[in-house]
Length: 311
Image (cartoon, rainbow, N blue to C red; front, side, top):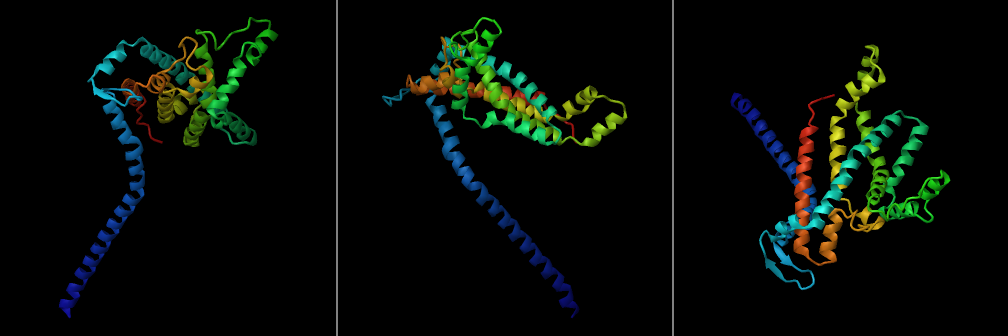
C-alpha cells in the first residue's frame, strides 16, 4: 500500500505535465492558424512585390517592350543627377516641413479644446473629423473650385475686402501652399482623435495634485501634458511625416503636379516615370531611394521622441 501511495503522485504529476504540454502545443497551433493567413497575404502582396521591385531597380526595364537588361547602379546614379527628381524631393520635403509642425499644433489644440466630455464637444469632434472620411478626389475638387480665380470663394472674399485676387493654383509660388492648406484640413481631425486618446490616458490625479500645489494651466501643460504626451507626439510626427513625404493623390487631383512642376512630389514623379514614360526600372530605383529616406527619418524621429516616462 505504501508503494502505491508513493507512485500515485508521480503519475498525477506526469499526467499534468502531459496536459500542460499538449495545451501549450494547441495554443501555439492556434496562434499559427490565426497568423498564417495574414502572413501569406503579406508575402504575396507586399514582400514578394518589394523584392521584385528591388531587382527591377537594377535593370533597364521598359513596360511596353518587356525587355530587361541588367545595368547595375546606373538608375540610382542617374537619379541623383536628375533635376526633376531632386526638385520633386524638395517639394515633398517642403510640404512635410510645413505640414508636420502646423498640423500637429492644430490637432493638439483642437484636442485640448474638445477634451472635456459634453454634447457640444461631441458635435464639434464629429465636425472636425468629417474631412478625414471625405474622399480625397472630392476634397481636392472642392478646393480647386474654392481656389478658382474666376468664381472661387477665396477670391470672392478677397474682392469683398477690396484686396487683389490671387491666381492660387496657377502661380508656381503659391500652388504648393494651396496643397498644404488642403492637406492640413483633410488630416487634422484624424490626429485630433489620436491626441484625444493620449490626453484621456493621462491620470487626472496628476492635474489635481498640480492644482493643489498652485500650478496654473500653462505650467500644467508644459510640466504634465507635454511630457506624458511624448509617445503620442512621436506617433503623430512619424505618421504625419510618412504621409507628407509620400503625398500623391491630393497633388494629382488638385494640380496634376503643375504649374511648371512646382507641386510635383516624389510619388507623383515615380508614378509618371513608371506609367507614363513606362520606365519601370528607373521608377523602382526612385521608389527605393524614397523608401530609404523615409526609413532614416523615421528612425531619427523615434530616437528623438524616445520617452522613459511611465504613468
